[in-house]
Amino acid sequence: MTDPQLPPPSGAEPFAPPAPPAAPPYATIPNAPAAAYPAAPPGAYQVPVGGYASPAGAYTAPDTTVRPSGLFGTIALILALLAAVVTPIIAGIAAFEIGRVLPQGVTTSTTEDLSVLSPARDQVLWAELSFWIGTVLGIAAIVIGIIAIAKRRGRGAGIAAVVVAVLGAVIFFTVLVAALAAGSAAGFATYTS
Image (tube, rainbow, N blue to C red; front, side, top):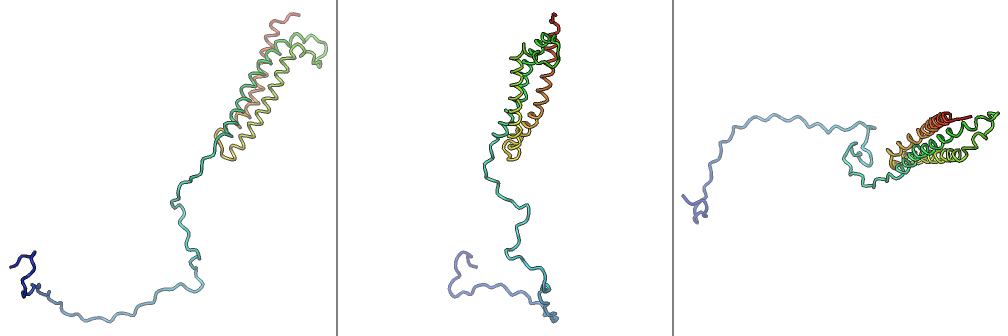
């Protein structure tokens, strides 16, 4: 016996394993003729020229565009808050003073005479200015808010601005009437004829 790591000595025959026993031959059955590959009937649907499209819902790379600024929505919200909060405060203060001074001019003989507002002309001017400033700010807030919503530049703030600007008119007139009524009550309480 020789070492398997060393080559066999010269002239020695290499060891070959015995051949496995052969199986008895079986009778072969003739094969059936191979069927032709099925082909589509003439006029059937053909593959598109450019090939098939990629399946829907396939992975796509994330969008790398820069997110638009929300400045429009923020500006609209600031204008709406100015129109709905600041101008009603100014109008409320002026309306209270108008109501407080108003009873002094009630003694006039005609009800269509605007001279009853003469003692409160400065306050009437402030109330009118706050009305027009609030109107301009509210309309600007609505327009800029709609632009912000449509262009998706601060959509949430734009929606809030439109809602606040529309409610600003209701807030303005509610504050105006309440302050005028409170001022008139205070004016009649101190009224002396």
